[in-house]
Image (cartoon, rainbow over all chains, first blue to last red):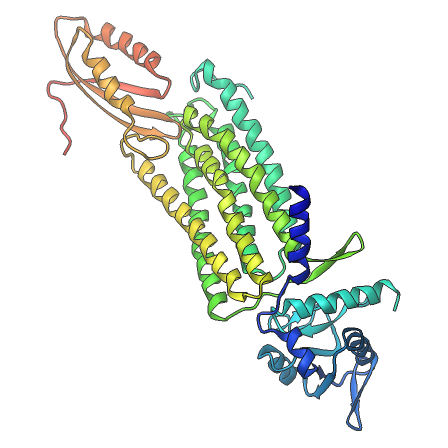
Length: 143
Length: 316
């Protein structure tokens, strides 16, 4: 009995949690849409290309998951609004646990000891889970 | 703390001590639940609701223990009826807290549903494994339910024996705690299955149960303070004890006819017995003896006055 319960938990556990707006599955076709704010050294735009520590990080993530990546540049408030309406998936640019956008966006786990994290559409728990796993791994490997 | 004989009969004293022990255990256990829940609750509305319910669940245990300390004092110059009513006051304040919290939670949960709030639930690293926080929340919810139920089942019969409403409310709420936990678990599983609204719906159901408990208790507390006729502890009907006392009094040889009125003072009853007496008996002596008999009739009849009248009072 115990083994069956454990087995069931593992099976359900693997497909859990899901995304209410299906973000993670959509990224497989549409690529991960990443909002980039201008906040060097975390992220910035130069001659139409995205650079920065967090840009590198997110590229490692998409490579691991085999996803394409689409960058969208903009101000914090416009990008967070897009995030809120599920038009983009993630916003990067040196946010931390104390960000003022807490109410409007979800936060990933911290990828370093400075409590830096990414913003993510609220409730998209599968994408969050994938990102969290990646970022935790990254932190534990000491980059 | 020693229980004074005037308060509780000997056979109920061990029950009271058990109740006290159980309430101390309840407080410690509830505190651990509240801390654990706070640590894992994240942005789930259902968890927030269940958490506040559990936090509020400590109030009856604490007020029971405090009220017990106060009510144990005997009557003195300032409070000549004793301190029994402290239970009614504790009961009233507890139920107002519950009712107020219920109102707040139901509004808060409905707002979160209207705003289509999608709760984000992250994950943590545990034993080298990335685990979705939802599973941890479910674990904590189970911990918040099963010991609570056991405590509730243990306290319920004691509360009935002691006729103590705070203890009864506390026990009844704890016994039903599994429903809160179950609703919250369904909410969390709903989130995991990609149904963001499951969380807010579960929260509304939980708030509804808090509100219902609050309303029922508030009503009982107010009716008791309005000196209504004593009822059973679960408000299921009038206490037959009052009718029995009247019968008992009428059976005395010197009593032609009698009527009584009683009200609840915490766990005991106060009241008067009106007697139309047979003038051939020495009334002062008989009245004195009868007061003594009434005290021995039942421990709940704590403070009784006998009034000799020509005509019995009538109530509508």
